[in-house]
Image 1 (cartoon, helix red, strand yellow):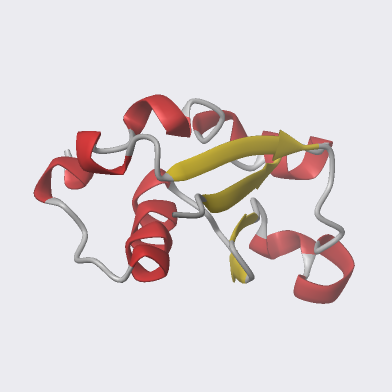
Image 2 (cartoon, helix red, strand yellow; image 1 turned 135 degrees about the vertical axis):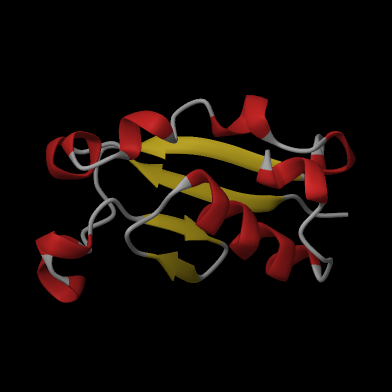
Length: 92
């Protein structure tokens, strides 16, 4: 099974607007998802111009862009990509 790719933008704007809270996302994943999700950081997703800087931080889950990304909103997008409900442990 192919892992769901999760790319966290850690460019300056995204980092300052909250991506710093997303860097450790892999360690926050529910146990059932570990090994099924590949989290990586990238210096820029080039979304600030297209989506607007005020919508940062940005994360891509597969081909889905998550703006105003938070750990919960990213995990919801991961659940969608896996075709599963969001585990209760992801909300804590």
